[in-house]
Image 1 (cartoon, rainbow, N blue to C red):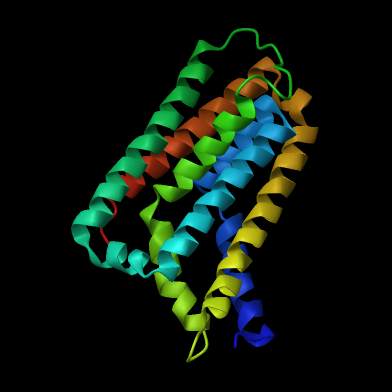
Image 2 (tube, rainbow, N blue to C red):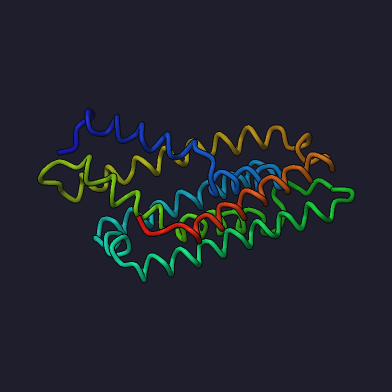
Length: 209
């Protein structure tokens, strides 16, 4: 049975991975800054949904297949990289347009749904998450792990990720009127767009672990 002594260090590793800047952070930050806390939380929920997907995949052993298969890994990697670059290009285009920016309503039409989908797809299409689960989970599972042990360990990254990104969305959402000033908005769009494009290119160029 999984013990506290196993859960605590695992939670620490997961937390370090969550707070590190990456595509998930960029999407949550931008949605919260542009559309408010609700959209940011929706993006956070989408990221958490992606972790749930990978947890289930890992539980059934399919993540190991993805990590072991060069072809499967490459396909997911290219699709994920293209998706990140597309999102980044859209943000850069918004930054180039500039002009007066009108603050949209916090619950704008389709904002939360779009944020959730982008958070979910951005995470699911990242093969590094699969490799993370394959490499990390077995190290913290007991010798004769049960389905309950696997589910418990899978729950840890979901809770930590959701709490962290909800905190980010809340803080950024509270500063939304400042962040959506025309000049600040252009900087945010340019910064997050550049980050997403760079991460997409890096993902595409990365060799299989």
